[in-house]
Amino acid sequence: MQIVAKDLTYIYSEKSKSLAVRAVDGVTLTIDEGEFFGIVGRTGSGKSTFVQHLNGLIKVGKDKGSLKIGEFDLTDKDCDFMALRSKVGMVFQYPEAQLFAETVFDDVAFGLKNFYPELSPEETTERVKTALTLVGLNYEEVKEKSPFELSGGQKRRVAIAGVIVTRPEVLVLDEPAAGLDPVGKRDFIRLLKELHKTFVKTIIIVSHDMNLVSENCSRAVVFDKGKIALSGTPKEIFSDAKKVAELGLDLPVTAKLTNDLKDKGIIIDSDLTTDDFIQKYLRAVKDKGGAL
Amino acid sequence: MKEMTFGQYYPTNSPVHKMNASVKILLVIAYIVAVFMVDYYHFLGLLACLFAIVIATVIARVPFGRMLKSIKGVIFLVVFSAVLQVFFNKQGTPLWEGGFITDEGLLTAGFITMRIVLIVLGASLLTLTTSPVELADGIEFLLYPLKYIKFPVHEFALIMSIALRFIPTLLEETDRIIKAQKARGANFESGNIFKRAKALIPVLIPLLISSFRRADELADAMDARCYAGSKVRTKYKKTTFGLGDLFGLLFFAGLIVGVVYLNGFYLYPYLVA
Ligand SMILES: Nc1ncnc2c1ncn2[C@@H]1O[C@H](COP(=O)(O)OP(=O)(O)OP(=O)(O)O)[C@@H](O)[C@H]1O
Ligand SMILES: [Mg+2]
Image (cartoon, rainbow over all chains, first blue to last red; front, side):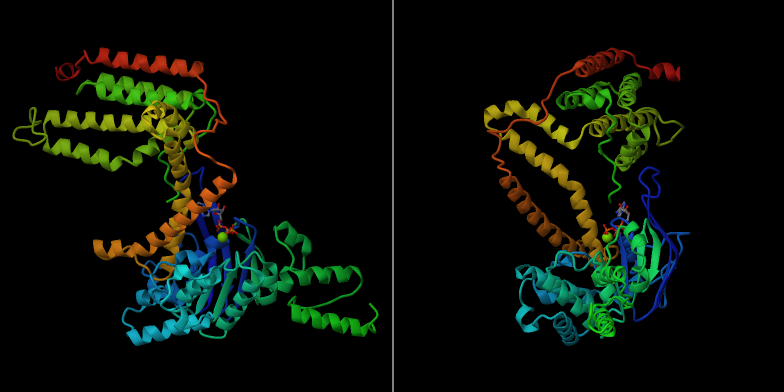
């Protein structure tokens, strides 16, 4: 499913003059099927507001632009939001806050039962099992446990299983790695990449971690005051260090190193992933006869 | 949900804002008493009360729009009681031959509407000009005498101010959880009342759990800063009694006297005469 937003605008408390906030301001953006898409920007720049449009949690207002996701026209009054939400999964920051059921099984099955009430118990069990296995949990071990007796990392996995259990084609994640330790973060990225190889065709991730973006995203946009300030591949976005700093962002480590080396007269033209950077760097070293 | 305005603090640093919170609470109580002291159909008394609250609002430099917004919250109550009076009050004379709407019904509806509106205006002027913390302090001070019958006044006030402090947080959290469950296909909008009540479980349980977690954290934070209850506590802000307070007391005392005086004038016969 391709996502096409045209001139999308959202204003909080629109009716009040003093409280009105233009959180999203004329955003035009196309995200193709199959992308691993990054959304970055300083705090309050409108990222969360934008992504909440993608499964109709925030409705597109009248004269506030248009938004199409595959077959779904979200500007249309008769848009089937239930069907849309089963196709576009949404993982919020601290998703473990959504856990509520008595057992892990029931919690993960919640979305499935909402979207597909006609599913047979065997099919439900099968899908829950698949989802829990995908997020790296042992189904037999956790299914009867209360979600509240799990560790923080496990809770988050259960919460994500509860979203992917409906096999969404688009998975939107709003700062999903917040509060994870480095190992947890690495595992989490690995999980996203695994999912990207399965039924999840498009991943859209909101993040403050530029390394995560440069390492994984095919394309990204930078939000600033509700508008798109920069867009392109990570390489394109992080090429202008000054502009990036103006937008309140950091550079990924690879971009910093590229700039430092450039000052020393060594030009490295990588796509800013660690692997590519190291390869290009080693080649540069070799070309100089190992004398750096 | 964040757009609720009833009782939001509106700081302008006016003389009314600087008044002692306990005094303001007492004055609002006095004002409400005055509104209730106005005899039925003695609209002049109500006008005096309206006059008083308008003056106070002007001095407080609170925009009238903000005051009127608070009425929105009780509009249902107002309309409901007015309609009830207009259609079901059988006393007095019908407005037309055989009609079911009586003059007394209309008068009562108008009177009750004004009364509710006036009370809401008074209460919201208090919350618009007094921060929640000051309010809690004011109530604590007023309840102080209850200490002698071993009522835990300080703890009570603390509970109140913590509750006030966490209302916005709770609303935000509710909003987030509702969104997360909606994204998982929860449906809060259709079905009969039992279905809808059941649909709230996935919201209420996470809310409860996060509230307990927050309470735990808050308790730890208070412990860490050596909070030890009422015995050893002093106030950061000393309450004072200033000129503004004295003026306020006189003003509302005048209002009560005025209302009693105006109760002597029954306007309606002159209106129809
Ligand atoms: N429920 C709301 N009511 C009113 N204003 C809001 C609400 N939610 C967000 N805003 C405002 O809209 C703007 C954009 O907020 P948003 O949450 O989309 O930013 P963000 O880019 O996700 O920030 P962060 O990185 O901190 O999550 C901010 O100015 C914020 O104050
Ligand atoms: Mg956000």
